[in-house]
Image 1 (spheres, one colour):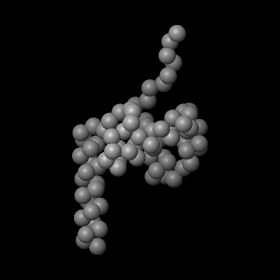
Image 2 (image 1 turned 45 degrees about the vertical axis):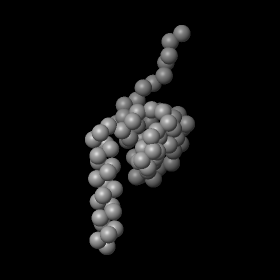
Image 3 (image 1 turned 90 degrees about the vertical axis):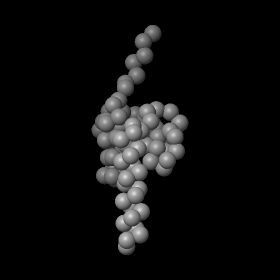
Image 4 (image 1 turned 135 degrees about the vertical axis):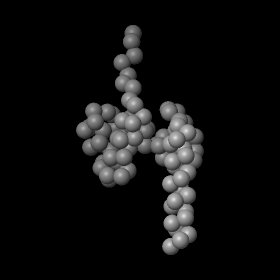
Length: 85
C-alpha cells in the first residue's frame, strides 16, 4: 500500500498561517480555499506558535537559522520600540 499523503513546502504552510494570523481569516475558510484539512492547518498553526514562542515544535520542520535570526531581530525591534516610546 502506498502513502498518498501530501507534502507541503514550508512557504505554503507559512502563507496559510499568514492568512489566519495576519489577514484574520477563519481557519475553516482558509483550509477550504487551499484544499487542505482544517486539522492540518490547526496543527501548522500550533507548531508555528510554539516556534515563535521560543519552544521547540513537537513535530514537523524546525526553523532555519535565517528564520530564527529574523525572529530574534523582530523581537529586538519590538523591545527597542517599546523602550523608546
